[in-house]
Length: 120
Image (tube, rainbow, N blue to C red; front, side, top):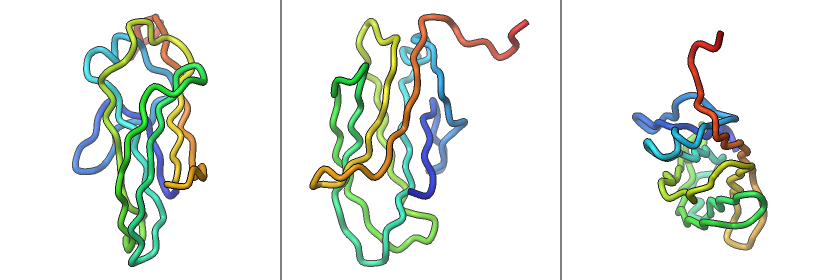
């Protein structure tokens, strides 16, 4: 993979800041994007999966079809908006090939506390 990010925003196929910690309020306000740019040679057509896991248990498996040929990697993302009511804990998005090979893992933590831009 050439680039990965967990973000609250995606614009022009580019993610916002890569977050390692997110508040439950941020999840409820707009969900999260799992962004992956995957190095894929020209002519490659393959299905991959973003597998969203919460405290070690799979909660979503989303299929993505990738196509090779872009030097910076094939950009793919999922936008998860349906989170459990009690979503605080450890999350990860595993990026898998169709036959189950792990090609990347994105990790983040959801907290009950509100995130502040200016902690004092």
